[in-house]
Length: 238
Image (cartoon, rainbow, N blue to C red):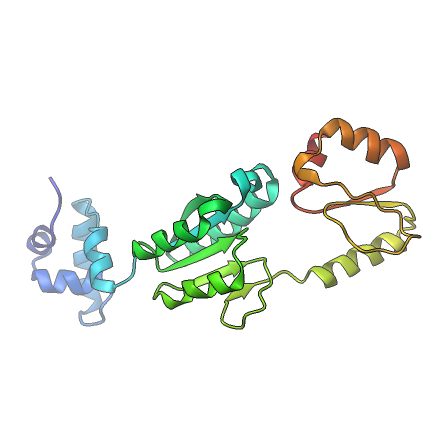
C-alpha cells in the first residue's frame, strides 16, 4: 500500500500540511519537527509522487538530448558516449534526469517539435542536426528552451554551445611539432591545407578498416594520426 502524507503525519504527530512543508523544503517548521517528519517518512518507506511534485513545482526535472543523424550513425563512435555520460552526470548532480532520443535526418524537425509539444522536459539539447537556421529558429518560438550542441549557427537567435576547434587544433599541432613529428595524417573531412603538409582525407562513413590500414597507414607510415570524432571508432578497431 502506498504511504500518504496523512500516514506520515499520524506517525509523526503533526498535521499533513506540516508534512507537506517539510517534504517540499519549506522553511516554516522547526528543525525538531522536520526531524520527526523525516524519520516517520523513512520508517514508512515513503516515495514521493513524482507527478504531483512536477505539477506543484511546474518542473519535470528532465532534460532531453536529441541525437540526430543519418541512420543514427553517430552512435557508433565513442565521442557520443563521452557526450551523453558528461551531460547525464552533470544533470544528475543538479537533480535532473536525462532522456536520450534519436531522430533521423529525414524527420528531425518534426520529431523535435513533437518532443517539445509533449511538454515532458524542462529543456532540449540537440546534437548532429542538419536543419538550416531558418527551420532551427522556429523551435525557439516554443516555451521549452532549446540548445544546439557543437554546431555553429549564423542566426543570433539560436542558442548554441560550441567547441573551440581552431584553438584546440592549433595547440595539438604545436605540441606535435615540438615533439619532433614531421609526418602527420589527418583523418576526417576535407581541410584546405598547403601542399607541403602531408594529409590524406578519407570520407569515413564509407571507409573500410582494410582501406584505412592499406591506404593511410601503409602508404605514408605517419608518426601521428589526427582524427575527427567520427573516425575515432574505426581507428580504434584498425
